[in-house]
Amino acid sequence: MRSKKWIWPVVVAVGVVVAVGVVVYTSSRPPSPTFEKKKGESPSKLELEEGLVVPIGPNWKLSYRMEKGWANYYEYIPTEENLSNYTKMIRVVIGKGKKVNPARFIDRWAALWEKGCPGGKVYLIDDNLSSSTPWSEVKGVCPHGPEIFAKGIEGKGGFYFVSILFKKGGDRDREGLEFVKNVRLKYREVGK
Image (cartoon, rainbow, N blue to C red; front, side):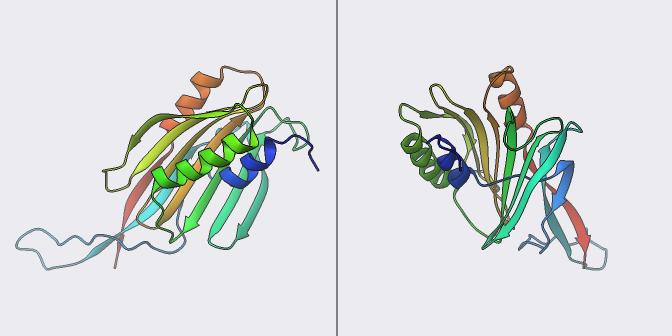
């Protein structure tokens, strides 16, 4: 068991990771808008399938996976590292069918981060809470500890929380910001 106090809020609050640079579509189709064909064509309804896009490159490996309760958890680390000695980690939580407001989730997560890391702070990077798929992006800083960049998205089919944690080294701001900016939902039409 790790003795550092900051790791438990990270594990509890963040969850864990998904999708090696591909789109992972939710296993159950979300409640979706339907579309009618153009005027003059016979009516036909289409359904949208929701997928999470996570920018995980080829130099990452799946190190942990768990399905528990309402969520699937995934965790990735660089291929040359292991769980007892890693420099960065990507985590994803996919909440199946859960409707969670990203701002409220981030507020609760930030409280856990700051409680587990004395002197730690969480800063809002950006958000769009008025879109059809609201999202929030944040940066968590822990003095003498890790930094984390995270994004929470409320999709049509569930809630998604994706993060990249840096224990040490690297250009944290550049890599972290680029990472969260590229996490997004993607939809494709599925005929009925």
